[in-house]
Length: 516
Ligand code: SAH
Image (cartoon, rainbow, N blue to C red):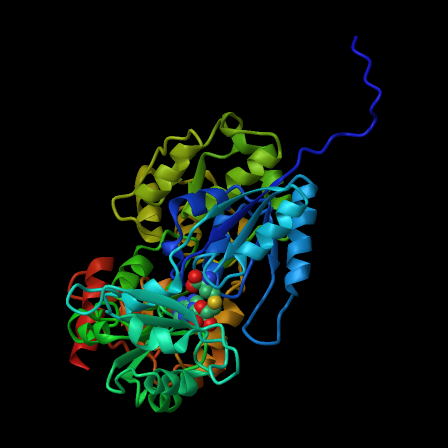
């Protein structure tokens, strides 16, 4: 055998990926950037990199926020960031350094890489959509145009233009270049505009200022070199914002596509019952809405499994095993699995499911439902079972801690011996605080409801503060049953589509705001 004297495990060196996150809209990251992010073991990210991107990294990755909220309040110094990248890479990790926009455009990406070079650490760079092009695009400004300009400059506005020995050649850029885009230029905007005019640029040159470009909270204003400082001040625009100077800004009148979408600037709270793929959110966002998703329900296992365990121990004594929800199925089979059992241990009882979806969930565990009622409700299920005859039958009903009694009661009335066991319980949802805070801030325009339970769970979350929290908020319901539940609880529904589907709910919301 080969003698190996080295006792120490050799750590394979890691690698740093410097990735441009894009300007704000998380979907503007490149495919390559996203693929690498999905493999990250450490993610070191900035203030301007969209936090929504972080959910694409593996859950077990380490996330390090390194701030940089402009100016003096840096969460970490550049030296600390450099050191961090070096340390993680040396420990053999795959490090993603995620920066807003493009890492090499006013992003100090070069400096971080120079540091890695010193230590011989491997790296790759993935460019990103820089905020200047995004801001222009999302404000309806083609940044170059054959009729208006054939040159373009990205300039830092961070430097005070009045200071001696400026690195920016104001005399040359003022008239020498068509479109000028200033990063970090809000604080110095008055002197930037003044300096350009002083160096020969026409005071009537149009200027657009775009804050939080490409995000649902984007705000843009327009003026001329002579007026823009005042316009920005009056509109209360603060960083991060970009200043676009040049004749191309005129095209905004025609091309301002992003801000003209029907639900732009509308913040909509979408209530959900459980983790569901949210078609509604996607369609609302397509129309420009800023969506906040709020789960109105959360579930946990019961306080004790004793009841179910006891029932499982004598499962073949039952004639019926009845499931009236998918959740009950998930928790029931979850426990079965925990106990090292599987569907084969359920020999004996026939299995009833309340509807098609429940029956399909059973299928996933290898069980074909023996009974599915014609009407997919607890009442319908009870009626179907009664029709088959339940006198003297032992019936096991695994279900939520608090549930309607109609099914067990009806079966008992017809002579069945019903045993109800708790397999899960509803608890306060994790979004409880968030939903209340969002409403309290007062910038939610509308709340959507897609089922009766979203209405009742949502109102439960608001409790006695309901009137205060819902002041000025519009409500949309998907259909008549949901609207009826809302009415029963004294909640006014402002929007209800004629057809009860998600796309028509979105159409109805768009029509509602079009009329306002
Ligand atoms: N590397 C980044 C720029 C970092 S400098 C990029 O390529 O975009 C920081 C400045 O970028 C901010 O002060 C602001 O001027 C600009 N900026 C970044 N993201 C922005 C956004 N979403 N909207 C407007 N300006 C933004």
